[in-house]
Structure formats: structure tokens, C-alpha cells
Image 1: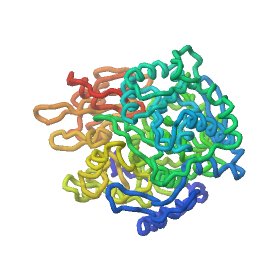
Image 2: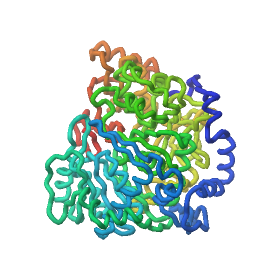
Image 3: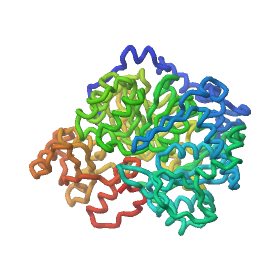
Image 4: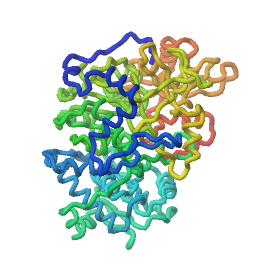
Amino acid sequence: MSEMTPEIYQPSPAVTANAIVKDYEEMSRFAGENLEQFWASQAEKFFWFSKWQKVLDNANQPFFKWFVGGQTNIVANCLDRHLATWRRNKLALIWEGENGDLRTFSYHALNREVCKFASVLRSMGVKKGDRVTIYMGRVPELPIAMLACAKIGAVHSVVYGGFSIEALQGRIEDSQSNVLITCDGSFMNGKVVELKKIVDEALRRAPTIEHVIVYKRTGQNVAMEAGRDYWYHDLVALPLARSLSNSGCETEIMDAEDPLFMLYTSGTTGKPKAILHTHGGYMVGIGTTLQTVFDIKEEDRWWCAADPGWITGHSYIVYGPLLLGATSFIYEGAPTYPYPNRWWSMVEKYGINILYTAPTAIRGLMRFGEAWPNRHDLSSLRLLGSVGEPINPEAWRWYYRVIGKERCPIMDTWWQTETGMFMITPMPVVDLKPGSATRPFPGVEADVYSEEGKPVAVGEEGYLVLKRPWPAMLRTIYKDPERYVKQYWSKFPGVYFTGDSARKDKDGYFWIIGRVDDVLKVSGYRLGTAEIESAFVSHPDVAEAAAIGLPHEIKGNAIHAYVILKAGATPSEALAEELKAHVANNLGPIAKPEKVTFLTQLPKTRSGKIMRRVLKARAQGIAEGDLSTLEE
């Protein structure tokens, strides 16, 4: 992931000619010099019940407020405003189940379902400011439930469908929800995930929940507790829900700073924290970034292949595309079920124009070679995207060449649950360097700091920081403002500390190295785990790798690596030695791994991030800590 790479990929004239933003430099200059004016001009593209008096209030830093005095509701912009236009009959959602089921919703039909469910929640006593926990599979009723909560001013807390009993229970208790929405089960890799069973066990330990609403997806027998549990289909068929959906169910008028949702971060370290986002600034931030970075046009079919339960799903599956009146595709299941061409067959079948996914998914699909994607017509694709972690150059090139056929620029986005929106990202007209997220979004000011809080030299590694507020930023950690200040604003006073390490090259391009916790010190040299892993993946036999540092009496730390091989490659001592030499050759002798272990699976969070601390704990035979976010 070296910034010395000579490779620069320039956008084609066709991409540049059709891009929404044609002059990236001018947009960046204007936003940099006129921050409030820039964001106000973006906010004016949305519907407000009443306009703001002040764009940005920074009187009580770091508790910034945006569009102060403005009144809106994100659902008024995602649904209500489209119903008065031709978009009423445009497809909002296309959904395919893992078993091949197909469902589609026009904006009119989606609004009707949201109104029905909003009226159900209101009839259960859910009101503005109440928290509602959502724990579902990847079905259309998940975004419907989110939108219904937002419509009536309730705060949703989506817990990824597949988190453990302990993770669900802890999040219910922390949010103090009294309504939970779930499914009887969900499908993943041809198996049923028993969501209702997990809910029942969690609720024995989390007594705040009064009502459980169960969507029937698998049809398996599940226990239903009388007086507490209700079937989703029964509730939305009630006369009250039907009559309200016909006449429209009133959208609650919200203050710009009223909370929209809370979302617990992955918790790769420590106790999970509930990040709080609001209606106004979040709406403006995600709508603006999605339109300009992914160049969304009316005729596009957009596929963000994340789960609605992550921030990527909140911002760029549910709210962002609907704000733009776009058509969004959602797939329920696993990328390789029943065969490794599942994604590519759906791109072809539905004519997907833009695909946004994670490097871990790209590397996973790379393992199966080029024959699977090459069976399919991928010519509908015009843009690709990457999210979740730094993408190693090898995976970038494969994605560009094999999936994009060297036509589709890759929008490699850096952002966080906390930021709500893309922060460092190219646009289609920007020159690309494989492995770099390029430059900050217009109006965003990022830098790389030393331990002393000073900007480091070009090419030097340091702490990634954000120096100006942005509209979609988190407002606090729910019920813990002190932790919010301590975690994000105290390492470098007045500056947001991202927790990531990075470096900046001579062109101002940022190279994200990874979490600060994922930097190893070997013989006095700092090496990012992402760099070491990228060197492994550049070997033709390696699909994925994880590197950790273990104590070493001479070097301080020695590199231990865990490697997943591509299909057809066989683990051997000779290959392990070859890989050690390959990494040393790529990064220098100092980076030569002490040990290489071959695995078939790495411990990951369900959002695809490798949990290196688990590997480290296992290697040292010590307690593994909080595993609530672990996939397996």
C-alpha cells in the first residue's frame, strides 16, 4: 500500500463528460473557503417544514449543532416529497431472497407499507423520542421498520441480525427500548438463522421489552408469548393500519437536531457505544455525498451490498438512495450461495449500474478466480465502490479489471459509523491510485498528526484527524457525553480523533493504514497490519491474510501471520517460507514474518473487519474479551 506507487488511473472522457460534479477542484475550493454557505446550498435541495436560522452552532464545542431552528423529517424527504412527482411510480426497492424470491416496491407502495407499520407502532404507544430495537434478517421489512420509526419520531436501534444473545441483550438494556421488531428466522448460506430463538433468550435477561413484532420469513415454528409477541402480517392487516395507509399517516415534524437513530459500533475493542445521529445534518450529509461521489442518476440501479444493520446500510442502502429518489437493490443472502457467481448473476439480471461493497467481500470472491464473473454480462456497471477498511492494491486491481472491465472508476471511501457520511473519497472525475481513498470530501478538512499534535511530513505515518465539523457527524454517545468527549475530542483538543493511522502523499492523497491499535512496532519500526496483509495478498496463492504482533525479546514485536489460500493452492512449509520471503521482498527485511499459519477462516466482525485481537489472544492463550460482534 505504498504511496510511491507510480500507478495513476485517470477517468475516461465518457465518465468525465457525464459526471454530476465536473469541477472537483472548484467545489473543494468553494467549500473550503465558505463552509456554511456550501452546506446551506446543499440543504436547500431538501424539504424543510421551516428553514434553519443558523447553519452551524459551534458555541458548545464539541457538541456541534447544524441547521439550528430548522424543522424537517428525513422520511418527508425519503418518501413524502416523491409522491407528488412522477417518482411515485418509480421503483424504490428491488429485493431478492437467497432462495430466489423477488419483491419490488414503487415509492407509492413503499410509502403505503411504511404508513401501515408506523400506525401499528403508534397504536402500541410508541411516540417521539422512544427507542425501538430492530433485529431482523435482510428483508424489505427492515428498512420499512426503520422508516416507520423515523416517520413518527421514534429513535431506531438496529442490531445486526445474527449478533449473539449477549450482544442483543446489552444493546436493548442500554437503549431502554420497550418494542422489538424481529423475524422468525432468516436465510444465510442456505441455512436458517434462528433470530426469534435468540430474541427469546435475550429477553429473559432484558425485561424492558413490552412488545415483540415478528415478521414471518422462514415459516418455521417459533414460540410466541401471548400478550407480548405479535405477527407482523396480522398487525398490518388490522383495519386501523389499513385505513391509515390509505389516507396517509402523518409524518412527525422534527427539529433538525432531534435524534433519528442510535447505532452501536462494532466494538472490536471495549464496551460497544451507541452513536447518536440526528434528522437534519445527517440527511444533508448523506444525500449530498451519495449523489456527488456515486454520481447517482434517475435511471440508475444502485446496489450497496452491505447490511442495513451497519452504518453503510443506514446511510447508503436505506436513507441515502431514497433521499435521491433512486432505485436501490437489496440481496438477502451470502455472496457465494449457492455458487460463487451469485453476485455477478444478479448484476446481469437486474442491470445494476453501481456496486458498492467491502474489500473483504472482493478478496473472498477473488479466491474463486475470474471464470465465475467472466460468465456474466457485467456491461451495465459504470461505477464501483469500496467501504469498510483500506482496500489493498491487489484487490483494487482485480475489482477494476475483472469486474469493472477497466471502464469503471472505483470510489474507495473512508468514513465511520461516527462520521455518518463519506469523509475521504474520490469522485468519478478524480485521478485514482490503487489503495488510496484519495482526498477529503469538499468541506472536510483532514490531516495526519504526530503524537505531539503537529502535522507530520509528507509520506510520514501518524494519526488521522478531522479539523472541521461536518453535518452528518455524531452528536454524542447515548447517555454518555463524557465518553464522547474523551474518546473523540481529547487526544488533540479541538480536533476529532478518528482512531485510525494514515499518511499523506505529495499530491495530498490519503493512505489509510488501519486502526491505531493495528500498528505494530518491530525493532523500532512502525508497520501497519494492513500493509503487511497487503504484501501477503499480492502473492498469487493468497486470498486473504491477517497479521498480528507477538512479544519478541529482541525485536520487541515479531510478526505472526494467518493466511487463507486461493482455491487450488495447497498449504506447505515450503509455501510458508516463500510467503515470508515475498513479504520481506515487498516491505523490506524488517517486515519478514516470524511465523505463517494457514487457516480456512479468519475471525471477523459481521461487518467484515478482521478481529486481530482475537487472533492475538488465541496465540497467547489469554482471554479473548468481548466476542459479541464476532461472525462465527
